[in-house]
Image (cartoon, rainbow, N blue to C red; front, side, top):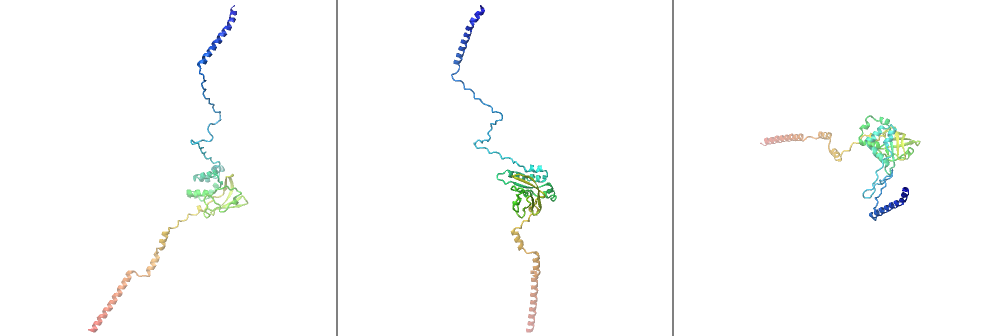
Length: 289
């Protein structure tokens, strides 16, 4: 009997439960607002490897910021260091800071490239002891520039150059002359008026830079010859020209009597004539008397 009663009461129990759930749902719906609350904005984290920084930075005014200049891709000092026989040339390029100018020219837009004649250490050892130390900073820069051409010249194109070849040191054909002669298309010799040298090998070459090893330091006449003495000022030269020399003064003085001597001789002559006149007057008086 008890089991039967439980089975009869189960439908009633489920009915009461469903009724309670319906009332609860209705009450909650009345208490909630008619419009659903806006959901907060969702942010998605950037995926790994994705940069949120703009590729071209923009300034506050809206104009793009100019990109920094690119570093030179070719470093002459590193090339010479790898060759391991140009330590003196490297030191000169660094102490004079000329290397900064040369590296900048390699990346300058429109540059025709560079050609560098590189004396090895044994070439510098042939110079007179203390020669480099005797040069001023300006002369050291000029010496290095005399080894540099402002264009790329391949080993087979030296015969296209016109003598005297203009270097970065200047275009004075008398004191900064460099004459190039080729034999057989590959042998290149050079003369400066002070030294004769030859290209003995290629250190580095590409489409912008050519570095050739030379057996001697290219000494221009501007470095070897002493500086010219400055010309005297025009006013001083004119004054010296009009001033009589001591020898001419003495020689002209020998032929002329001094004023003292002339006055003395004139006094003696005058006294003698006065004596003659006095004698004549006394004689005439005596005769008359």
